[in-house]
Length: 118
Image (cartoon, rainbow, N blue to C red; front, side, top):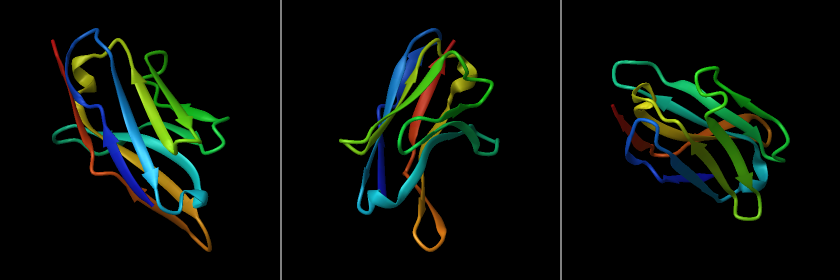
């Protein structure tokens, strides 16, 4: 599975951005997709996840009510709509896919930078 993120950039606090993650390859093996982020000097942390059927979502407390994860199965593309952005949301955002055949294997995108200015 290959994952390509897009949509990052520079935005002022209070603004919005939408990230996209396009999956290709053996997408039929994907069971869950998610967004993670890593700020300078910090560990990578979960932002939100969604099951590939799209029915179950999970959010970090820090983004609940501001971010929305969604999935277009026809396009094999996941989105993260980010509203009311804060400077502390500044990080590199990574797309993740959890796949399963005989074993669970994770794939990662290359990351996209999101910078929120105060």
